[in-house]
Image (tube, rainbow, N blue to C red; front, side, top):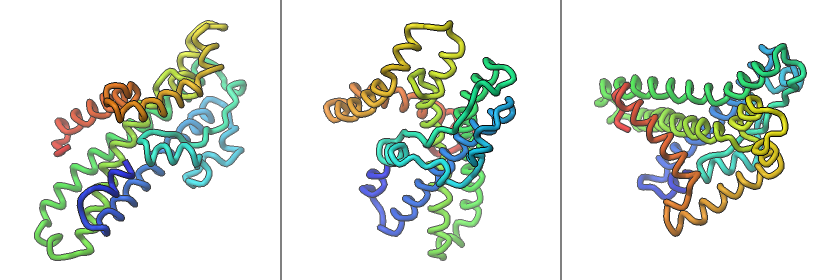
Length: 241
């Protein structure tokens, strides 16, 4: 995504504004995703994230360099996981499930809110189009806000689709682990090899995509989910997406 912005058409000043919008959307998405995990954990009785200072909107608290670079260049990645102690949950199963889905639900909410705000903003821009056309500052401001909401939709939907996968250490795996019996073979396998499976899908998929996009299974899945929701937002909110 980052490379596509820099390679795209337009003035260098517009590309820089789009770049800032993209990075801002990334930070908002990963901060809210991880903070949601910690907040719901606290509601279930575990204050570990709060005591560690992770219930914070400070991006430094949640920054993971590899995950951030993956998100910036590949399109999907992760933040530093929020520390959680399930032993403190009042109900283990309820706590694990609600904490696990908190991040992806937050990303879906952020994507939906961004779609609504983008639709309202575009209506406003249309109403004052003549004024925008005569002001360089307003034109750049419109580009910044419009692309921030657009990237926020895409990034949050991507994070939602990515994190719901039942692969360790993603949120989807935590749900599967909680709902299955002890010593489940799939859970055992994923705990041992999940990280390798995940990186294998990421790296191998990107390499094979140069041969054919149909070889990138993870990419096809992410694109299918994000495209489906974007089409839904377009119909509901009348967005030209």
